Amino acid sequence: MGQPSFFDRENRLQSISQLGDPLERLTAVIPWEVFRPQLKPVHEKERKSNAGRKPFEVVLMFKILILQTLYNLADEQVEYQIRDRLSFARFLGLGLEDEVPDATTVWRFRERLKELGLLETVFNRFDDFLVAEGFEAKQGQIIDASIVPVPIQRNPREANRRIKNGEVPQDWGDAKRAQKDVDGRWTGKRGKKYFGYKNHLSIDAKHKLIRRFETTPENVHDSRVFHVFGFQENSMGGNFIRTIGLARAKLKIGLMNLTYNLMRYLQLTKGRESTLAIA
Image (cartoon, rainbow, N blue to C red):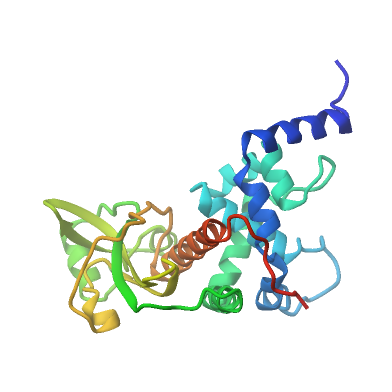
């Protein structure tokens, strides 16, 4: 059998569109270029030489993180799915002949976002876009929080005691330390125990868009984050994340919140196109 032709690919994509591809509308409605200025610092670190492969462009890498978050995929899984699924490749603007970022490249891009603290800036940029589109926060806010579990840590009792006191067990080397989450905490809810973090949210009551968020260890009550005393279970639910440490959890949870806002915007704008002019 011969190789698939351009027309074979286009016919398959047309069939995917007819069946309803949410990524196709996500491509059309979200003005992805508004994020470029906030993402540019990822590649602005000083290079020792001009040798080596040119980095993948930042908007492409950011869209991969959104895909990964939307479908809850590990780095290796998102690489495989981009190679395997035409709908993923179309969303990213990649042809069959284009190079696909591997799992390590995805991890490194996400790490740079974490190191530079860019996710909050990107989140706020989209909120500015929402306001410009007429979706400013109205009718008050809803304060809510959800539990976000991470892989459970199995440690001896003495090690756990030290961790709770803000210490790292003396017998842990660098390799073991990198595999241990000393920031996550246990909490109880409805008779069950959970280990991980809390996603504290401020949601505008009219549009149900997330306007502000904070990530803390699970045992921190939300009244200590937004200075209110009510606690309600977040209607989004808590999604399990594969990460270690508070800084990485903040980034992953921030991506969850931004992805929710992107998809919520699609719901709010059914039947109309974006009117914001992109410079």
